Length: 382
Image (cartoon, rainbow, N blue to C red; front, side):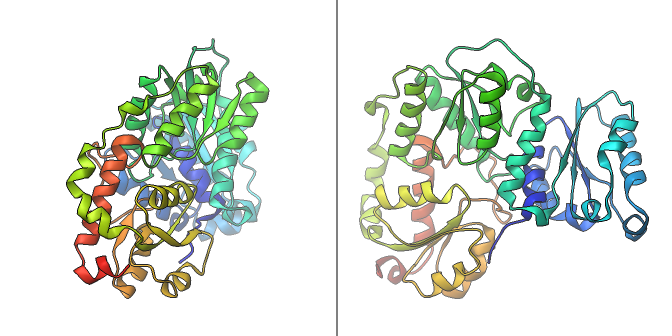
């Protein structure tokens, strides 16, 4: 199936990454429920999103009073420093003047407004535009030498916390400091993002990087998500080169653990697989082909509504995707490795990344175990 929640979901996910701000969704309950339930599943301890809960009355007579009432309630009940209003389809259609409502209130909070009706663009468009709107919070800071902002993350991505810890670990070996993870940070960290010497765009967030280059004279580079050993080294070396630092030496790689599963890896070599995802999919496909020797038959993004047909007509005996690909995996009787948002039938709370050098081990382990759960003929069919 095609997965793209539209501009609203992208903006919502970007805003959710400011951990101590409140995301106020100006939408009917149903529009808020989808992204909200997925965010709640992945982070059950802190839910920082609420909804104006527009009903038929507001749709007929306007939702501005509901927005005003919700802003006052949030400001009085939540101790956070900021409120991020994400306005969706219905307010756009009925013509709510959200800016006028916000200007009319004297609240002791920083407030940002993101107009993000889902029909006005893709999920990625929403993410990009939301970061630009949130940039109003940023403040000029003295530059921290050899520091970077990593732009492109979402707080509800599968493995995101473990991946960030691993990426920080690798960068620290090269003497690189991480100033801010956008958007998986506190409000103060986001405000202080202009202190970085370099912005690193990891898959998405390029519009914010271009804005910060213009407003704060911070250069930026683009880097692929670091799946696998080689891509992890390349990731660090590329950032290090931009900061005039050397990367991680090749002897940092520990290949000893892979010898324990040599026979399995040999049997899986050449295995035809299919992959779908967002900006994570191409780096993942490269890891599967270059380091595990898989044959990627189908490589699609979430906008491809014909992915299931492509997989069914291919020779693929494993799928890499989200929880939404479970249906086609069951129909075809082949394993599914979940690696990309949304993942709602697996949990990830331990320090077991998929990114980086350590992540390559955990990812390979998951892949081999997924194959072992099926009969030998599925493993050897390739």
